[in-house]
Image (cartoon, rainbow, N blue to C red):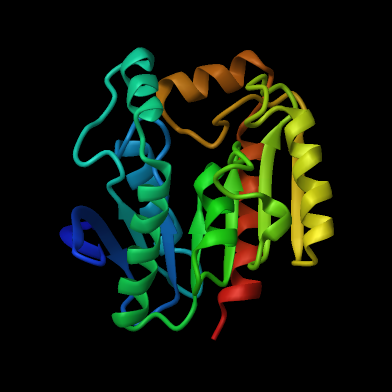
Length: 233
C-alpha cells in the first residue's frame, strides 16, 4: 500500500510543496522511485510496491514531478516531459532523500532513468542509484562527476539517440569508469526501451521483439543484488 502525503523543499525564500507516495518497511533503507515520462501511473506505483517487498525490506518513495498530471497518450506525456523543470526535479529528489533520512532510513538510493544518474552527481546523501533506459544531458549532470555507485540497464534495440541508445549506454560506461565510482552497465539483446513495464503495451512490445519475462527478472535480480550491496545496514 502507498500513502500520499506532502513534501516541501525551500531555497532562500522560495518554497515548493509537492505530493509524494510512500510505502514499505518502517526504518528500512529508502529508495526514491522516479516516474517515467507518463507521470505517476500504475507502472511506477507497481515498481515501488515490488521494490518495497524485496528482502530485507525497503521504504519506497515516489515524488510527483508533474504535480498531479498524468499523460494519457504519448503526445501528452512528451509535452509534459518537455516542460519538466529538470533542476527542480533534482530538488524534489533531494527533498525525498532528506525526508527518508529524517524518517528512519540510514541509507538511501534512487531508481529509474536519467534522473537517477543525475542524482548520483547532484544529490548528497544518495548511497547508490539504478537507472533503466536513460542518461541525463551533460548540462544537467555529467556522469563523469558521479559520487555514488551507478547501475544502469539498456536495451540493445532502444533507438532513443542521445538518451538511451547503445552508443549513449557505452559512452556512459566510459564516463563511469573515469569517475572512479563502482558501476555496472548492462545491455540486453533484442530489447527495446522501457522493457521493465508490465502494461499491455509493454508486454506486447516485448513479445514483438521475441523477448520473454526472463530478461525482466534478470534485470530485477541484478537490481536487488545492487541495492543489497550498498543499502544493507
